[in-house]
Length: 395
Ligand SMILES: [Zn+2]
Ligand SMILES: [Zn+2]
Image 1 (cartoon, rainbow, N blue to C red):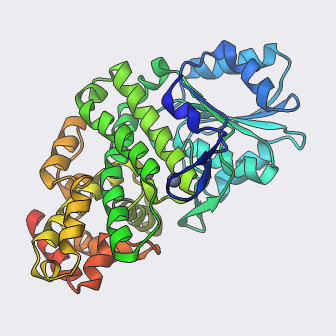
Image 2: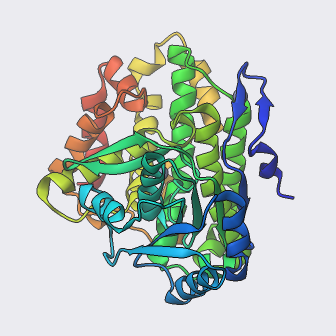
Image 3: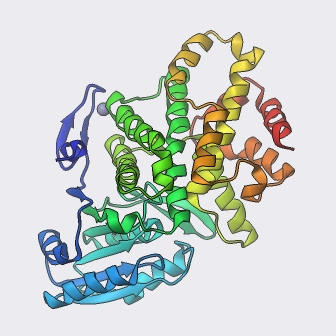
């Protein structure tokens, strides 16, 4: 049994002072289509099932899963999305509700990130369990409790139930489109700066912190980084580390009931880029790819912070530097990870010009109420100097 399975569906009395509970009942990546009826039978009370599938999902799995369920007598309604980069907005939510039968007793989500966000939201509103069949190692939302949706043109995280169980097959997941693997790896190495931001806030603001959760994210992230080359080669063991790390960071968020362990300033950069594209009516950029870019920016911002006089004279500067060292990557390390996975090392590669680059450093940190290096630089009165410095490195 995988170590993390102990965390599922059990009360965990933790040294942080809280008792944690993850409502997910099972995670297993040895799924085969012939298992599906048994799985659904375990969690869904009734035989009316809504199946939501996406563009990226292999036709064969769809047919096998759907065929298997039909053979077992399930009454299926199927919502299939053909958009290459599906926007999880009112239209997509509406499509699901229009396709669903009023007797729907459960939802099966077969696909990657967006399909899961939509399914969890719909399941929460319909009060039915959601079972996820993950098909790509593209993002960390499989085990998340919130649904990331686009509402009136803006990205929002809406409270939703967790999925009941997550399944997948490494043979299928390792054959996902390469851009989804790049995105998943980007979302994972972004945990490094997320943990650094959390450690910073712990010292500066005395924010809540859970060692067990941090270790869970740190260990699974490091395993992926050590296997970066093999992830790029779609090696099955390495892809298994990646999908597990993605699921684990969702579990970590669920443990502390906060996105803190998985999302820091690098995610604010990503959210800012999504917001800007939505405003301009453009296709939204990939979550994991923009998180990867955000991680590069954060590594430079911390580099600037640590070199600055204003930081040096702070009472807690030594403590901060020592605590963050464990998590924080150098810009050279981030460049190396980007290179291995085949992502751009330059803002142009993310369609970001000089003004936009400077603007996002000045503004991204303030779109959500979350303490990160952006707020800290602002508190020290050196955010603009930092933005000028990092912009000057590229333009
Ligand atoms: Zn804890
Ligand atoms: Zn993420």
